[in-house]
Amino acid sequence: MSIFDDVNQTTNKASDIGERYIKTSHQYFRLKVFHQLTLSFSMIVKAVIIGLLSFVGLLFFSVALVVELSKVYESLTIGCVIVGFLYLLLALIMYVLKSKINKFVIRKIGSKFFK
Image (cartoon, rainbow, N blue to C red; front, side, top):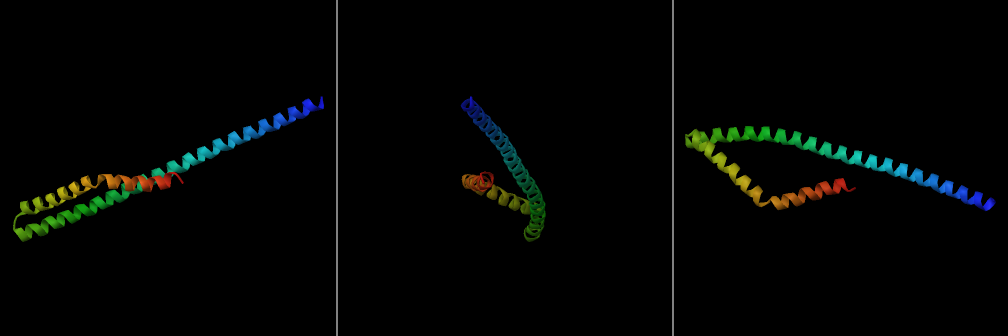
């Protein structure tokens, strides 16, 4: 009977070790998911804050540029049209470079996400 008892003890030990491994792995994956979610959320919040502040700054610069161009050309309409065309040109450049921008973003986020 001692062989059966030894086998039974070994089986119980292996079962306990397996259960601990599963629990530890589950806790690790939960912690990893939490870590990735907090990093992602933090990145989104920072992007929104920086984006909003940049937008407000760009808005003030645009108004200042319109005012200066209006003084130079003595027409508010021409100042607004020139600034509008500048933004359309920037949008066109961004559209042409969209695949490079996507690759850059994927590389940056991928390096953070798959650490």
